[in-house]
Image (cartoon, rainbow, N blue to C red; front, side, top):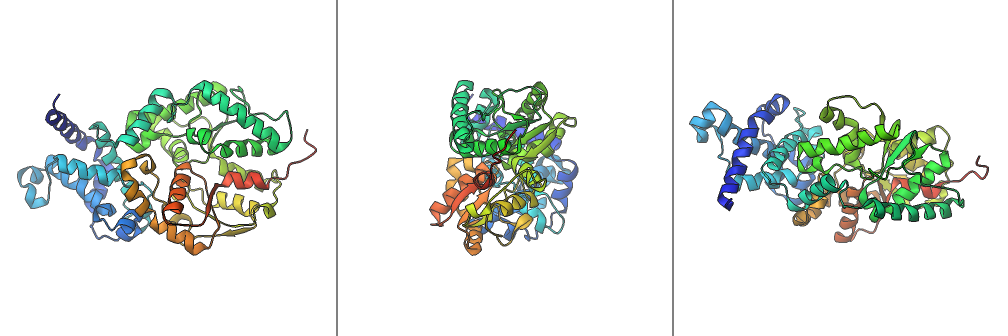
Length: 436
């Protein structure tokens, strides 16, 4: 097939899917958007770059223009009269940029007078582009690897077991107990803890710290040798089938092991995907609880099961809310409760909680090398937030956020450390010498 024929096929695919996907609330939001631009100053991408194509309403307007051209009478008969646009290569390129340089953070929704959910609109654009084969290369690669090999980095079971052996040795040293273990494939365990591949390979202290906390509270837990990737890159790429399959794999593993609680590691989108998305994608309610590790830590602390010495962490600490955990996932107080119990000097960023700025690395942006310049510029509002806080340490609960914050610190000469909530809590643990 020639390049021209491939382009024509992609265009036809998008046109055919438009009618199916632009329905219900999506159609209503496109119709009621007044293009007032109030969302502009709420968007980190627009504020950081000044590019008008990053204004949330501009994304909605571009989708609406294409929809009108093919699925309204006036758009078909008099496209210029109603501002309808033909779907050509230039428009496809613009849609790709608009969709995949949006982090789906939903901050704009808070400031929209109509409450328009631009992240859902962008989700539709991504779904259309995925069907047309227009997912950015880096993101497509991670999605395909996860789908074909079970995790985004293609880690084999033997490689995983080798890493866990080392994690277990580190755990035993940390708790001074040669019998401390990281259980694997233990059927009937109450909790299945699922990490991410990048934690297995680059941020191992997250897993070791979680194991230390589970050890301290005597949790009945296990990890899986089959499913050790909490992420769902199908959600980022827009591929509905791969999104569903990745969620289904975790559900199947929960059922195989008979666990009652799916404990997801520090990862924003995996929590949102399994807590709120999976039931829709799979068509039924999940027969188990879905929790994030920071949520569990807050519960342990409130139940008096954790003994912590905050004087261990004396630096000024602030918290960056991952958008999928906080604004979209509702976990606002839980990470703060955990941090306030584990550090001596906690400060908030302004604005904070639901209104905090996105770091600019989510929605798959961190996985797309070609978008690095935009990603770093988009993070500038977050950098200014951190500077104003006076913090020496930025804690967060998401790998993508960590990677972005580390890049921002280097790029903008920001003198802060970036750590996970779970690591600060584990460092502050006072272990009970009289364990059963």
